[in-house]
Length: 228
Image 1 (tube, helix red, strand yellow):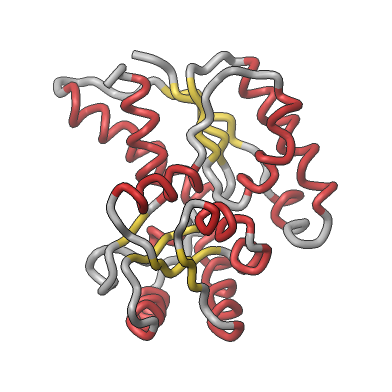
Image 2: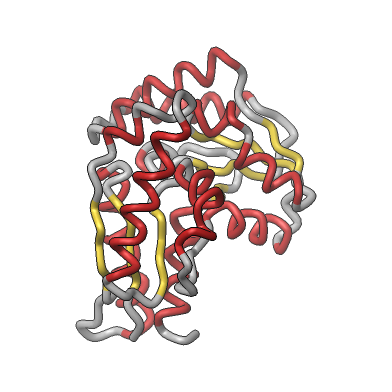
C-alpha cells in the first residue's frame, strides 16, 4: 500500500473528516484490520486564513514551505485538505520541483461533473472562493455552468463557516443550507467547495445531488494507494 500525504489543519475540523474517510475507504476495500497509510502535516492555519483575499503574497510562501516539508517526508501522493489553497497551489506548484501526484480537488470535481453529465451547478464555498472566481473558472473552462449564491447568502455562509472552523455545528446552520439549496432552481448538482461544509450539508438536507471534493480526493488517493 502506498502512503498518502495530507496537508491538513486547514482547518482542523475538516481534516478529521479526511482521516476518517481515508481509513473507511481502505477498510471497505481490504477488509480485516486494514487502515490507510497516512502522513499528516498539520499546519497552523491562522496566518493563511486571515490573508485570503487581502494579501496573496502572504499565503503563497507559507503554502510552499509547508508543502516542501511534506514532500520531504516522501509520501506517494498528496491531498491538500482545503479547496481555497488550490488557488495558491496552482501558483507555486512549479517551484516545488516534485513529481509526487497531488489530488487536485477542483479538477477532480470538473472531471466528475463531465463524466456524469452534470452541466449546471451551484457552488457553495467560502466567501473568498466564491468571489475570487478561481474555482468557478476551472469548472467553466471544462464546460460547466456555475451559479454562486448572492451577496447576502455569501455573507451568511461566511458566518457559518467561522463557526464550523471551530467545530460548532448547529441545526440552524443545516437548515440554512437546506433552504439555500432549495431556493436555487434548475440546477443539476451542488458542489461543497469548502471542506467544512460536509459537516452541515448531506443527502438528508439537500434536494440536489451533492458533489463533495473531499470524497473525490479521498477515493482518488485510495485508488492510487491500492493500485486500483
